Length: 369
Image 1 (cartoon, helix red, strand yellow):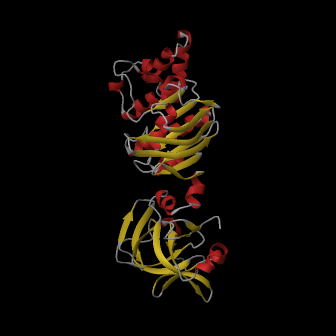
Image 2: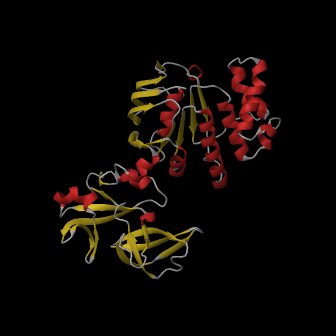
Image 3: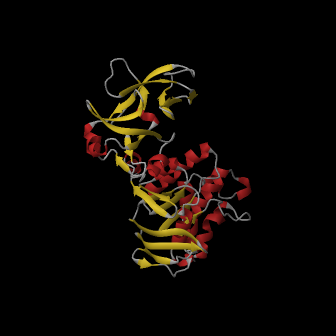
């Protein structure tokens, strides 16, 4: 197992500055997920770690060994690609064994290693088949098996599940997480899917325009985002952002959304914003923190809304309504509402709401305050 140390890493493609001064330390055995929108530099960063791209500036060290000038084969890294990259004329056994043979593993050791990797991935019964005879999920298992059969220093995954349908993605996420728990190896996984990031990672590194926007444990980023971008990226459906003006009222601070519509801000979390009274803010409200108001409840801030859209999902129902002029989504219980046009009493958990400075896009009140 190996620590990965990246310092001041830059990568250019001509005039296009793709990776902009990345500093990152990944401890041994951690499952780190690089996540962000397409074009944010996450795959380029992964390929630079692997040696498939060379860094223009900065250093990369694996287990305290600088690897910038080393070829990919010498970095002792196993990589799983999006397109599987299997040899169509080889059986599953030979595809998995290929890397072992290339690294001159003793022939007597190969069958046992291949069999163990195949059994871990539930493809032991497929070893004599060819790729054309396999399903998409089975092909991806073979590609992962070819990587994990080696005792590599790092395991890199470049959006390995993006070609699979939703059910197979769910299944393979579980397989990869179980595999990490069993092997205890250092793994770095690239995805644009925030659900994959949240479910797989020990630590998320959220990238934006070639830089790290925020990194930390999944729930830390979800509950304590540092910027509006982070708050909006994580969560499905995404966070609602409602413009308001901060005012001092008779009972303390409140966020005025529209004439006659204001939400009280708990002093324990928002009291430090008193000097900003009179200034605009944005409230970040997650759909799951809006709920149907229960009779006699005093736990949330009550609002009355006209439901404009109802989207049942089975276990939950998503509804849309206007909060001021902002279309807002709430996640309700399955049978809380049945049709659009209903007038509903909802309540917002103000202990979970965040406040954002609209000028700087920084979160100025969240779960850490």
